[in-house]
Image 1: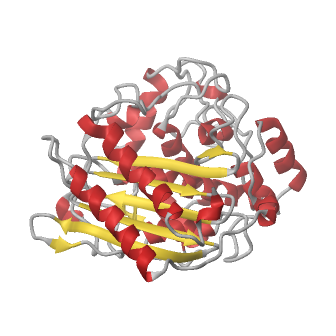
Image 2: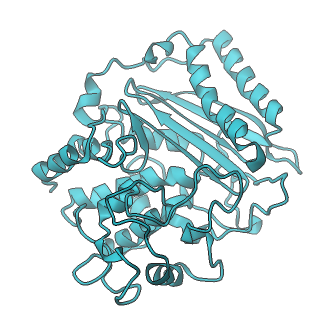
Length: 393
């Protein structure tokens, strides 16, 4: 069983306590009311206008209130070349929106007494030991803990969130050495890519850290990352359809969109299974929203984690109080953006019980600020148009 004292001490040490768990239940909740016909027409038009403005192949939005899906809509195509109409059931690469799923799996192991956040990852006495090669490693590698990986405070291996180019940065090992297996890449990285800071000193967003968390899950459970997450998290949320995606167009899952590029890069030039625990899942927006309702701290539907656990998961670190463990937080609201070749997505979940996910099967890095920004701010403006929801502001 989870040691309540251990979790609460960790939260107190981490910095700002975000709303979640029992605290979230005291907030005024947005009612689970669908928009009126007139309001729905306005929302539909807003999505369709955004798709036209940016030439997005297809985009999908799902909004939940008080644990229920209250709005879904799509615009454009699942496959522009065949003119296949996009539906709310189509699956997308969710990219970095995979991080909260991985974090929930880690905290499940903490609750089961099989893992501690302060455990180190590499070297003697650590969780992974010498599975990816024996020391000596690059400087500071043996100091990295599970919590450092969750909070992006390991000290390096950075993904550049500001770049308008792909791949994101040469400093992120996950976008290097495509010829290597995941195990080979990890072994090479911890030997050859130095951390620029000691762990726990600075916040540097690192998808590689979430790749390592997947390997911790596998070591602790003796299962593949995907198998454990599907059985212990997703199936408990009633979401058996979420899965790790394939790399090539021929490996598309049934019901998965086609990814598009207008900038010359190949959206299928990627090893998605190698990126399983940080960018590998495919899901519909409503799937991701339903997952969020099971880690939101509200009573319905039931959460897959205990209230004290959710408080820790939603607590920012001292280094960066605006990032908790799996997502950004501000005043208890959780939000995250993700993108890969030919896809982009965003999620937000508010302390008042309203949340949303947007996804698109195209992306323009040259227009990243306006393209991504318009798509991810769209639900914020949508919520303002529905009288029953607008109280969240």
